[in-house]
Image (cartoon, rainbow, N blue to C red; front, side, top):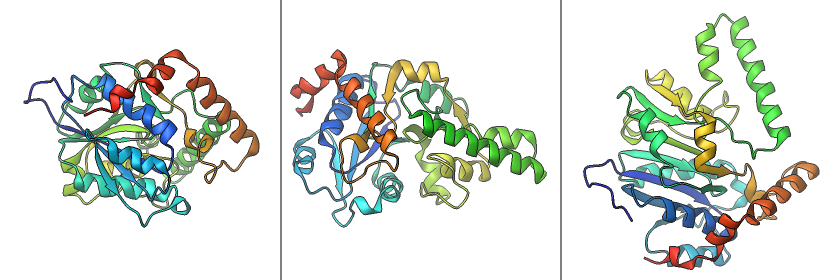
Length: 276
């Protein structure tokens, strides 16, 4: 699917999935439409889907489908992280991009900021951005409070200000790029430990401890290139509702509004993007 020079780095994109064909088809079609310039390998790790979404994924010849039939929704969200651990060992790319199925690509240069930041130095092992605006307000508030609390506790424990700042700013795993060889060399994992407060922190913490840097992409740049509906799969998978009824209604409304936008409708209708 690439028209880029064969000398360009191979990028492996890895997306965990479970029974959200309506969202996954748009996600994948947006990638297909806007990634012609990149040397890209797309892995989809299916966590035990039992509906027609699995047949749909099997029909796509331009992706590599990795099936884990022993998984199911009761293992969520842990099986999202183990899917990336599994995927990175099946990948062949120089860089490994974690992605959620509720992320849609909007521009042909969407990976440029990731590459710009991670290629600054061999000591930079990850690049990405903080949360996007389509996260629920309660979720954003919760993470800010937790992040501030953790930072304050570390200051009280004698941790320096730079450490606290760094640990409050790390690539979020809804769409983040990593050096695959670094993660494999050091045996790192995406599975959260007891210190983790949100997606992306665990792997960033391990990279820092190993002496590597992570770099942030300005949110304005990220928002121009992709859309992320945090917890968007909860609007389509009845088995995975949010714990708060009000939050569930809001995420369903956000997904409905997004699906109503012309550029998303165009992706939903363009089946040619599925072809090999």
